[in-house]
Amino acid sequence: MENEVLRTVRGGYDKGAVISKLDSYNTLLLMIEQGALSDAAINAELAKIRASPIPKAKGGLILKGSGFSVEDTDKYIADLEKKISEKIML
Image (cartoon, rainbow, N blue to C red; front, side, top):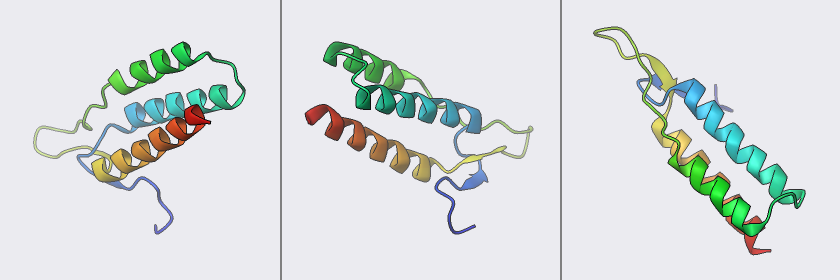
């Protein structure tokens, strides 16, 4: 599918962990836009999100499980980080 932001691949990042981390980033963005957090709270939450690991997808003994592409996920997270830094700088 051409419109996929995060491609599904063999191996890759665990889908649940990726979705959870992206949800945390998006929640933080919404809270920044609403002015609901102080700068210190934003930085603390951002540090917590960054520190949360994204494990690789698990599979059977021989085959790797399917997960989200590492390259796609890292790029998407970098874009979210850029959006957050732009919002903080305003």
